[in-house]
Length: 430
Image (cartoon, rainbow, N blue to C red; front, side, top):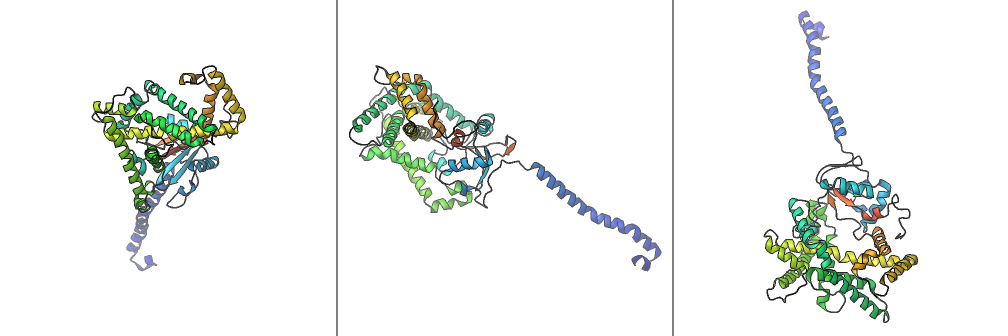
């Protein structure tokens, strides 16, 4: 219609130009469509291949699935989703490692890229802004602190130097059990807890704070440390939703944390002041705090906060961990008469005419060592190892693990892995 109403020349011009104009108008649209398709393909190609895992809920992710005993819940989930499982804990991406092979990948093959620590609220406060070794994120400072800790406090000579403490406390425990056995039922859990706490306190401070007794001083240390352990495992909303820290304040968790920190700090100050007193009676039995105070005089970069952080690691690493292992070992032996009989036979054979066992004899107890290892397999003291955090992207078993991902190694699941153990649920020291 247009061409018949125009001048013939104009009609020809329109017929030639109109397709060109339409093409010019379509070119940007085609360019946009191609860019969108290209971007979609690129995004699909670059999208990380994450490990499998349960679908989470909006906002909270998989937090609701952890339950009261996360190590058991995660073990059950791993049987469905595999030994490398991905979770979303609020705003925190995480993976759960549930097999020995995957644990080796994380803790050996990719150790340098996955050896840092997350920064939970309670860890940060109770370690004096990460002045310790066990809970601190990876850094050059951490490397130096770890070197000091290992060389000064955990070397073979130093550990062997506290043998007299361990042997004295063992004799005291045996004597106490013997005296109580004929009078009343024995609360072995309480005695073992007191036993391990007394050893660690004498090693750390040169003094035991008895947890069995009536006096208030006897229970002071135990009460403070028990609350510290509870707070280190406490759920703080701010750790998973940084914008919601006010919830912890309203719930009283912040006040509870500050109260425990003040009590712990006062306890440290008290024992440090006693050790630093120039009028203190000389003693040839040097404890861990004496060693740390000596190191501080030599190194100006080592502050009192560092010393307190070291002490926390010593206390947490040797108190409830030891007593819990002893309790589980005794429970398993009581449930398995055959294993109990073999352990007793070995002890009687080794004791012979000596009447008691010393630390120098321990290397000869092969079956008893198996009992301890089997106990730790079935009942790991820390079922979810202290969490790690990846510093860089890593690839495990074909799956992409982005940086800043929390790594949870489930020792309980590894100890009961069917691929590694014929009867993983049974107590078989052999």
